[in-house]
Amino acid sequence: MAGRFAPRPTRTKVRGGQVAVPGAIPRPASGPGRVRTLAPDGPLDLGLVLGPLRRGPGDPTFRVTPDGSVWRTSRTPAGPGTLRVVARGAEVRGEAWGPGAEWLLDRLPELLGAADDPEAFTPRHRLVAVTRHRRPGLRLTRTGLVMESLIPSILEQKVTTDEAYRAWRLLVRRFGEIAPGPAPGGMCVMPEPRTWELIPSWEWHRAGVDDKRASTVLRAVRVAARLEESVRMEPPAARARLEVVPGIGPWTSAEVVQRSHGAADEVTVGDVHLPGIVGWALAGDRDADDAEMLRLLEPYAGQRHRAARLILLSGRVPARRVPKMPLWDIGRL
Image 1 (cartoon, rainbow, N blue to C red):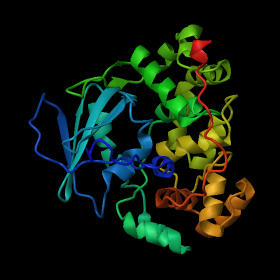
Image 2 (cartoon, one colour):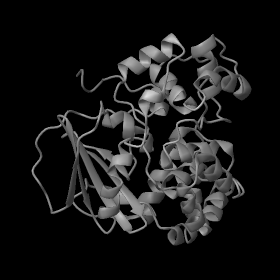
Image 3 (tube, rainbow, N blue to C red):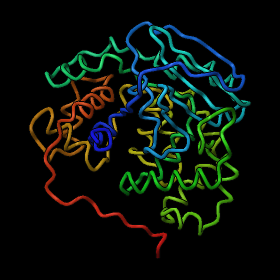
């Protein structure tokens, strides 16, 4: 009974990028895959590192299994691929399948935060220092892929997370392809750009995506190759390129480069909740706006995104003053 009614993670921990990953247990091998083993140079928490890549508990491109494995699917430049990552003691083992297997394994260290430097961060507030002490395995992931973060970020514009997660889940399952290799049932690879372009208008409607967000996705996938090139740019330049596409603004571009580039300083502005959470945690100001949030994060210049993630993971949030935003399913109209 206790297991059935275990408390759900708080919204701030979800936003902070935390996924519960069970302890690893032996799992029989199933199907040949390419393998790479790494020895991290410090503490590594797979749930914290890879958590921001999951778009809801039903994300068909991300799965955590009871044996402690984290499964991901990606559409790489070499083709679709499935990656399984599991931590065993001081080692992390990656196994991949599909045409994109080599690409995924080549970039496994960066995915696990090898390009990140946690030691560059100096806490300036007690709350941040305590949270960092309790989360020693936090590193910022770098996927090296833009579109897989851009499309779900567009779907999250101006709606609740539940609505956005539902849209992503329905569209990927409907128009994606089955994940290569022995991936858990129901896992899919996100559609390629051409497939996104061919999705009929009524399917967007059924998934609860309004015309504005659907049109932004379509504009983005038509220049997908140019947007993917931004992964070789510095984060500010990459954001500028993304924001050339109508419908992509500072909020969306920041959410993308945080994942694709592992950008430690690109804090999300234009968010409904984040300024109030940061203001409340650092100054007791629940009515803080973007300008006040940026002022409070000034001591963390160069590491503002990491500071914001630690604040979200701390769980210190102001009490709700208004009812939760209602869900609107336009697919029923």
